[in-house]
Length: 241
Image 1: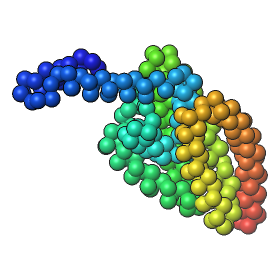
Image 2: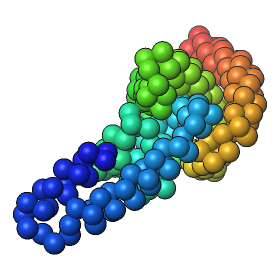
Image 3: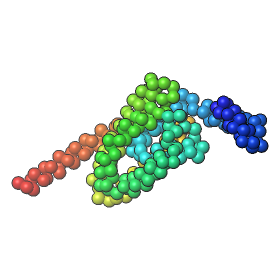
Image 4: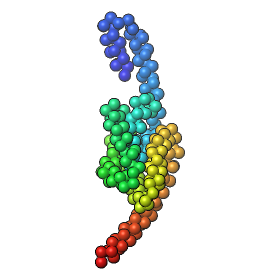
């Protein structure tokens, strides 16, 4: 980075601009110090918490977390690891923002939300693994693999919980519980990313509790949905007999 600013200073001096090498180097030094200070915030607990948060929320709000993290990095609110800085590219922000807009409304319409989940289930888990790997990949391929396994597992857990929960909620004709659950998921994205980047240890404890509860709820709802399906199948068979 220092060499970059020295080259810039020499280039400006060659153009005859009056900034001077000393002034440019002074500004460059301040920028380098700022970048170094931001990067120092990303210690291993913070990186692990960020990787876990990206994987977990990708299971139910992939486009929201991509847009939120990318926008936070672009605005300077949160330093991003090198492999995640692509999220703050304008093209990525426009794409993720447009998909977030569509998902925000599609996820709150009963029936359409389950269809949306089915379509996006093929991308949420690998995307969660890729995001988590990007958060840890700067330390080498081994940590990238650890991040991918962590993110993919957490994304699969949240995806399964979301799918079974929405299927159970859609068995009720009223739409309000569907909208309420969708808003809760919207809030979880913001809360998880904020907590992971500001209080990584607290986030880690709460994440373990949340994942265990999600597994329990998923198993209970799976049994409920299987019973509902069998009842509907028996009613259909008796009606056609």
